Length: 285
Length: 295
Image (spheres, rainbow over the protein chains, first blue to last red):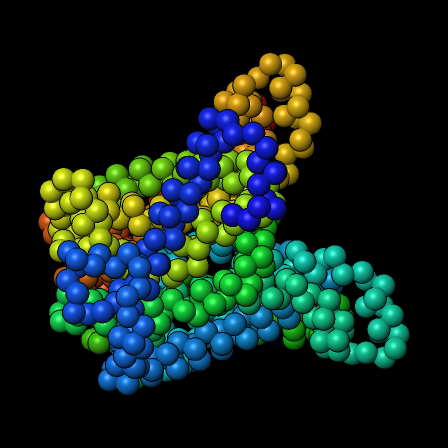
């Protein structure tokens, strides 16, 4: 730690020693698995574990060749495309569809408003287990297995997103809408030019939370994408890790690491937004 | 007349409501319908009345899954929430840079998707290469078969679970802690309260609403546990649950019946039963909370 920070921890008491020790030990437990995954990928494959327990990276070049091998010799790159498309389309769809509905629920009155909103909010209580099998059967009957629309469309009507954006849009001053309407703006223009730009913070938070949920979704791709050309990253990672895969641990860990990179980068960039977004779900729920 | 005036409103609502109807309401209703049929997804469904429910309630596998789930939930929810609360208190005792630093580090596991948490820990737990057994070995312990010893497997799962979720609950609880006015603590201190009494008489009552949210949310996700045990045991639709079904849980059992044995009617019934249990528990927690507030 730097000298500038030291004067603040004025006195060294048994309590402050205990506090720091505990905080640092927990930090090691929290970060170690991710650190270790990185080390396994960037380790000299010749060294046995007993001599080199992979507590730090030892070989940059073997890590690079691991990554090259996984990306070129397996279906990983293809799965990456599928996952990226699945995630981007889901984020775009969730933002558009739920902001349009939230705009109405937050700022206008119309017949049936309260009951519609109540029904959607009730769905927050229903677990995913209830809809999984029948949604699969519906998607199968539509002929959408192994298609992008089969992956994306069932996840778009996000009750959570609608709730969050409705809460946020309630704070938009009605006078702004009135003023825009007097200037001749249509209903859709009010949404597009007034409400959406004013909701930017909430939209970004929802986009980030949707990203984490979609990239990490395991169970839905597992049932919908059954052909290798539609496999997502989560499925390929689980295949690498399956008992029958017969791959060495450094290759498996490379597959894991590549799947971890997008969420980790997102976390580094949007850390504050992610933490605040999650913290606010607690106070509003 | 009012309806024509509201036409623009309804047009904006249409995309959401169509998707909501098609992929939420319709599946719920049709799933309830399927649960009375014997259907492999290919041939004509045959009406069987309540037989699916009977089969599930009498099956050995669903009883094992229910027992596992009960043990798991009873441990993982209190443990996970306590750890998260402890972390929140700890971080709250730091200021400025170090508070942000520790909060970020404790939060990092949360950004890992559940499937990755499982596939990373699978190797940490591994018998030979696994770093955990290596470390235990340094202290003279014998090799623990974390993922194949039926007496240990559940605790291995709980370990991953707490690792990946503690930071999430911590962040929510931390926001609740920040909302407690500082003068409450000063008043307690003037009355001669020590640190533990402060937590007991100021912190806990003040963050009750947030705590209830965290507990409810943890319950709901624990009851649907799937990704982590599925991957820790290297499961497939035909073979799942690990050795002696030690990590068999209801959603896994439902998936196996549906996709492994092509019993979609049974799987739908299973999903419906699970929903009943989860909604009942959520409603109980809410009712309990309301009663306490009124009494």
